[in-house]
Image 1: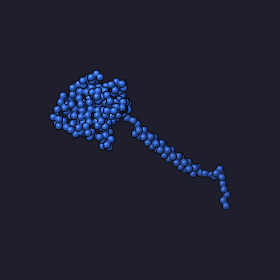
Image 2: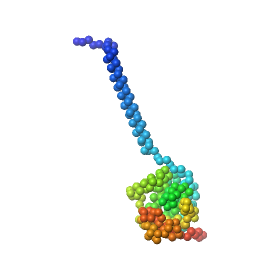
Image 3: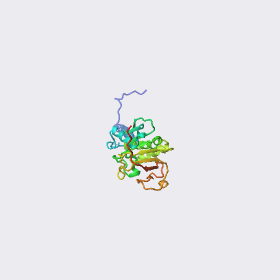
Image 4: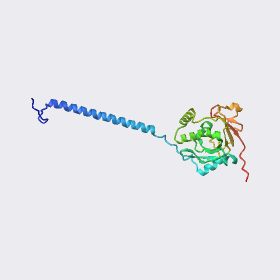
Length: 253
């Protein structure tokens, strides 16, 4: 039987010792490299997750906001008292339009901002735009929902093309739909300001008739005194615009 020698008694030649040390050093480098690679990959994965989750830079909201009482007052200037008296009212917040007063007559009043008017006058996202509406039930279930969605997306910082893309997705999914019945809104406020070139314009009524073309109403020029369908002519958002006389003050009771 061979005698057993302790590790202290083993004699390792310098050459063998060099080889063993080289192998151990190389293996340690491999471990370090693998750990560095895994660390780098983890950091990259975290970065990509954070990038995907990062919100779009929010838009400066200061120019779009109004004092709530003033916004409610302005919204009520859009239509006759018989409409505004029992209407629901909405105001714009940093999260979009929210209901402030629940009405009972089927009308819905709010002050639209510029998030919907790029096609109409090129002043999209002009913070000065104020467009008071009082819209009926079918209009509120359809067109108003698109107005509110566009406002929320724009306030979140999406550019106009991205907003259009999201709205198109909403129509494709059925979350939004064109009007299927009589849909109209009053826009008779003397305080409305619709952008450069339009200004306060005429008091008017708007009737949504999807896919109607301006030729169907005589091809009248946009923004004139005769009924017309503007740049949305022929689209799902086609709206017939009819100028009307200014509102008469409500008679005293």
